Length: 269
Image 1: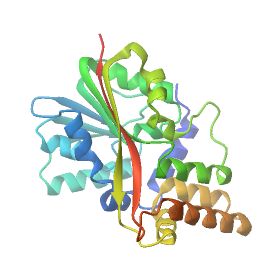
Image 2 (image 1 turned 90 degrees about the vertical axis):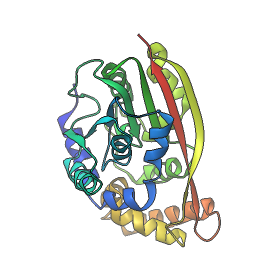
Image 3 (image 1 turned 30 degrees about the vertical axis):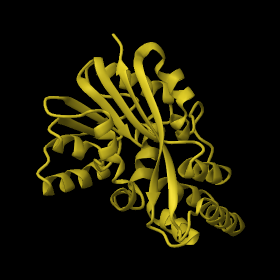
Image 4 (image 1 turned 135 degrees about the vertical axis):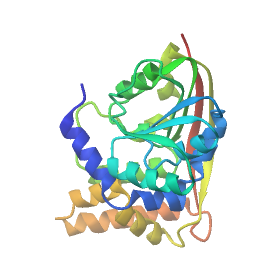
């Protein structure tokens, strides 16, 4: 049973700021990568969990699949639906909790999530749902930020300033650890492939530009700053820490390489 209070907070967090801008400006290349890796094409039924604005769901639909895009935050789905309409992409858009999906067992040939399900706080529950709704012999495909990569380290940087997580919750970047995925899916999958890749981000000219952008558009970062809003010294410290993170990962001219884990597997019987 999911916790309604936790879900309300998560929904509000992702609705804050302007995640659709970040999705369009920066992470949009990831969706087609996942669609290709999961070998999505005509005749397949596909579920995208934590679909957000549809960065993977829309390319999957354009590849000819019958796609359901699900997400906890209806504001994101609404943006995705409008964007899909401009491309004449046909999808089903469903408000849904990754930890309690409203679909029958074995409903989909392929179940994917592109930096989405990793933010469901209770990993075992979410992983069990991915397995449940994927038919035996079907494909599970994921892209998740790694703990060691830029976004994983950004969450580690913010952690000391953040409100305590709900009891039993696990950090999102653990979904980018192959050993953690093995513990989550176990013998529910076979034929696992994992590959570490990088998304080159050239949207920011300086570490400070990266920090200020995330402060204004990215829900998790906004939530952390709100948590310390009454303490100017801690705000200044987090400002400095995030700028230092950007400096540490700077590839030159503000360019950043964000590491992610590309994971595919076959659902066992």
